[in-house]
Image (cartoon, rainbow, N blue to C red):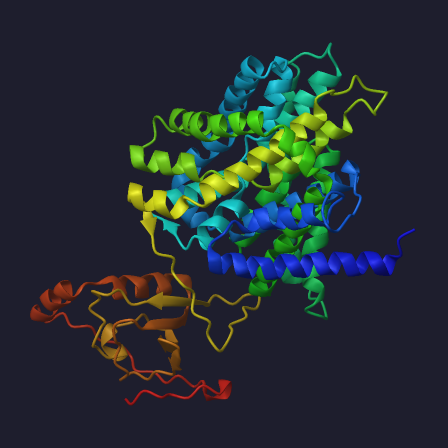
Length: 527
């Protein structure tokens, strides 16, 4: 018997190694998620760790919890304003695109590897969804962003296509284990799952916002407990009622993330950290479940399936789904290439294992182990090949954009319920008319407070006579409308300002004091 203390030591060491490895991977630009898997494999039965783990049920349970929390965190981080213009395209990719990918991979596997059609479609369904955390983790590690609609489109697609992939996977397993079942009977089930999942997700998200704002808990530390329990309740209740739990938690997170509630920043940080913890846990667990010797025996057919998915199925799904959208060839090519596979396919690959021949009450899936190994190989190949080439391809296609580094300010603004003002960092464009002018000359809206000015690594408390320089950023406190108006003022170009100046339309505005000495930040810029 292994003691509980020994389990704690091993688990903590594996987590620490994963965190340290992610730091090294960020410096070297390597695929972080693959390293998590590698650590799990090294700790497994065929690695130096010699941990014998052969429990697909536990791996699946950890994976489902991680998937739900990760999808909720993705919804919280999604900016509705940025994804709304690409809503139709994103939903098309997350539904029609998933069906096309699953169908093409299924037919390919059926013809080349002699799987039955249903087994091929099952493999295609499992690998059909892209993973938001994997996509953006790789973009960050490669220090590249994407221009225009590509970033919000990828964000929306990757965050919303898991429900379709989950439904397809479960439906095909049902058809394989119940040979007399009809495909037509699954259509109303799909509609019911999606409609019920969407309705309950939006309702639970709205109730969560009201709870957080009006419950008035005595201790701030209880709010993360409240939202965590609400996420689990949303998933469990929706799934129990026949809805799609993954869709429900995503929409609940999306609605919450775009609503105003108290302790919002701390709750966003909590769920982001929790999502990372669960992502590491699921990759370590799945790494323990994988037997490298078995995976290496299928590398020829694994390469075949991975290359077909990367070079044919995903591009075909992207181009066919968005054929009527206003995207040029370069944007479509980037979209097709950046769609990485992540934890979701490997989690879904555990479901056929639990419907296998060791379950005598069911027909069984004789190729369950092969499907799991193929999915693992396809995901690893997708992250390795695509991830390492993201920066080069983005630059080649001309769709890359520099990553905007968020400045860490020495103070934090915590909104309370009923507060209309918000804090925002506004960067001064290189050709802005604000450069070289005093703050009082900008004509900022009434009630707009410039709290701090960042210049390099220095922070200064401004006054009305403070002159703005190129490279400065302003930390502004105001309501949403005033913030939008302030952004427009900073976006005015120098040439336009000169025209307005010559027409005697000079900027004028109220002078105000900062009053922030209580934060211990001194004004080091002479007025």
